[in-house]
Length: 474
Image (cartoon, rainbow, N blue to C red):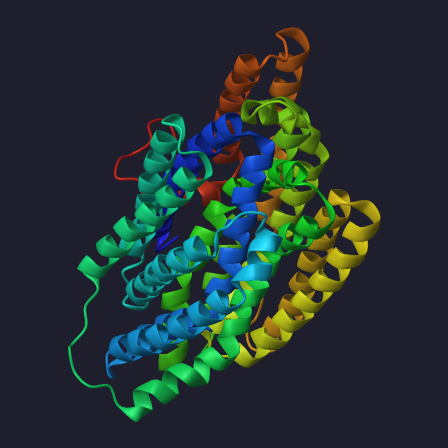
């Protein structure tokens, strides 16, 4: 895997972010309680949606155009466009603050406007760095944000600042991350041309809907659940979603790493042989953690969820459904990222439209009838539909070499892991400390098995580690 080290840096950065987020979430759920934490989740979910309106595809357009060429002043153009959009969206939020606060269940419009500004700064900084092929640096921004956010949130909540302490921690984390990103961004201070703006808007007019699709996958269910269920139920659902999302970070790290490389070679040549190989690599590693995570969740997920507090174990079946949805989405994301990288955002726009349409309709209907189970099923079905559409679309341009054998070996390596965990839970016990130890042992067994049965995985590991693994040969 040629760019494996970059992907590993990206993964380790996002993994550390997840660990920090996990610690913060456990603290907040236990100290704030399900209802207050649920209110926090609703505000942050709304923030994620309004940030799409405040960006409208500028970030992915910057990433694409900067990755193609060093010509043009895209950075200044993008920043100017971003500032105008933020002012417009902030004005709209202030105008509708009455009904918005009613929906949120807390007076938080001012908080929302402030958080929107810093969130957009972070998003733009990451996009610029990735477009400039500094993915390894961009990968550090999110962990820095999460670690700073978590430290401030935990401190303020422990000191008694409750919900608004959590909000202020979010603000501080974004400020720190934006400052770190700005330090590494390279650009010339000059007046951008009309052509610079046109090149950004030509891509952004399609790519903005990809953000809608991504956000629909991540939180459409939460937004719709807020109309039908209590904040306590939303808190449990969000925790299950966060656990499933932790397992998906490696696949997304691979996609982010490969995007600028695919974009560059596709812009230089119409020969897509290299694109096909990058796509195969991405698909081969998308389920590396999700596959064992799905099986592990089925075996011990009910116990692991109790770490968040009383009542969170009720999200066990939701966790399993959402983890499977994440697995489908991980493979879909590789296809969609490749389509975007070969400069066909019009195709991803159509796929994203189908995804969002099915996601909204199914969420409304199924949540109305079946509550949170309906939300989880709606998300899973929408992911399956978009995966099928993305696969059919990419085949028009690229020979898709599906990595059946590497994926099959990942499933095979789960078997000894599952056996040890199952036996351990049966004979040692099901207390939380015991289960945590079993999870660690299971992870070691899974990767040891995969190294044993998969020559490609051994080669990848050896090529991307700074030291040799004793006793392992290709």
